[in-house]
Length: 384
Length: 125
Image (cartoon, rainbow over all chains, first blue to last red; front, side):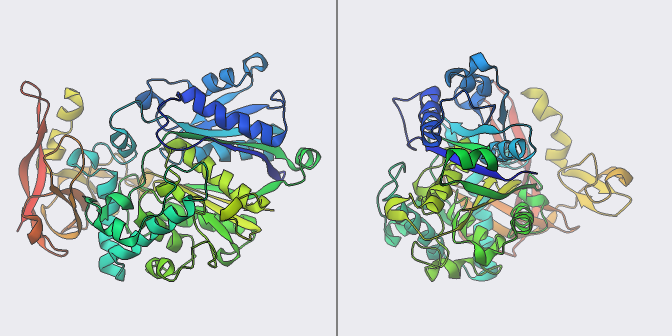
């Protein structure tokens, strides 16, 4: 296994991009990543793309070849592969690219994630098909409802308050103000969240991430090539993926995401670090309770103490372990299949020292990307 | 879409699930393979006891195709099986730990001439 570095990052704006098509959005991210890596394009040996549901969102399958084509790579006939694990698709693409370079099969690979959701009416229903269609969605247990069941139980078992969850949203909105790519670049107050209407009690509208248009891309290379191309390579120290029962009712406990615990444990071991060594993290706050669970399942807090961590400001910019400096899914936006790669872009920017007003001091960063209610989890650890 | 619903009828209407004779565990919804015994599975179809208690619940105000608000609950049944289902009662009366039992109820329909979706919901016991 060879060391693998990220040598280029790119990201489109996230949000309701009415004037941009799927192709436009992907190209914006891809071109930015290539320019950042100072590559011409023909150096790319393979392409991986994370995309949850091109078929349902835009009626287009065979997305990987489409993107290679529009990226001007058709003449080179490179292998182009789409991978899918609901809203963890982006991290799957990153992991496939990582393995392709680490194994020595390819030297320079691009990993992207993209979703165009605003061309259809009900993006949340499509996103909810990441849960069990037959036995969860059939009874009306959509994605917000399932996370609400988890949230209610967390409150009952550990005394977590609705205000604790609201604080996650407040923090992530505050961070997004300084992210030019973010969907919601405005602060909101605790009161705003608490007064927003219930979607699925106890979760309110401002506890829920939007479903957004967006794309992100990263260029990966072997250490040898990375050193020739850039002075600021960021290395992938570990990239681990795990799975779990699809439906939450099949799990022993709904308060622990087994896939997150497993992926995190594997990643810490491979990267030879502990949770306390992580200095910046992007985690999957599709719903605010998910960020609180992430604190616990990643080992930043003991089980049940996630609410305390947000209350004490530990995860704010300036805190001991800043989480979601980009604004997270809640405020930067959640472009489904793009999210995992977008998280990687933020961590690389932070480790390079290019995060502008949201810059933190960090040498080790982590991303956690989740599919649906946690049946897929990917944890990636980055180092300077 | 009709076969997709029709072939699940006995599992939705009667709460038929699976029992593994090798390890003695019950499963709902039914499984082809016991996730504990795998190759050694001895799966038999059984009707799952329809009495249980609420582990968690939510009142849902936004969602598609169903009349809102409605209650979704995570329910633990007597033989250890957990199920996510709807609970039919006043949202003010729900609490964690409350005893419930299964009932045959309508979930929805595909317009006036389409199929009607029936299934199991829960009511206070």
